[in-house]
Length: 194
Image (tube, rainbow, N blue to C red):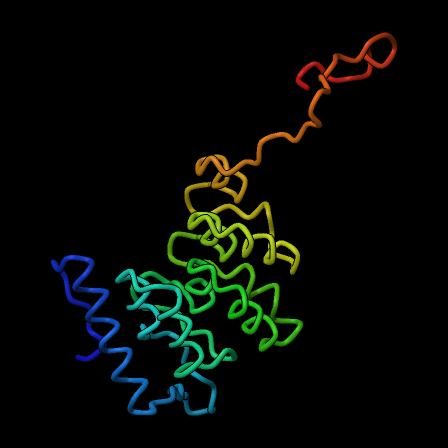
């Protein structure tokens, strides 16, 4: 009941409510321990306070405090609601340090799977970061092996998301310089679409 999402509340109330719950949980000293199957393997499919705080619009600082004080980076819970993992939430919230800790906590052979993990809409952490305009985090994910060509269920790749969000950097030119067309032999070798 404590973690049950409510509906039809203004965002200010929801954020305040989630913050109060977070404060209560942290003050009690609660530390998450995952449920385990009969073989002792952690059960990762469950909606946590991190997922709820993210859905309710809590600040990145609030979500980060939940990661640091309640949850572990070696456990990447996946929400029952939308398939978003804790790693997705960290990427959507721009929590670069937390994303780094998630990557460090997983085995080297599991990193590609973490970087390509998809939510129910097929969004990878890279796509989620870009949809939320977390460009530094997106750069970090790419530097660590995230696939730039992986499409979500709508067929959108990270480049499509960037273009839709109008986040393409403007071309840099030195002041006083002009772009000129190639001339002579060079012009014959340059494709026309450039």
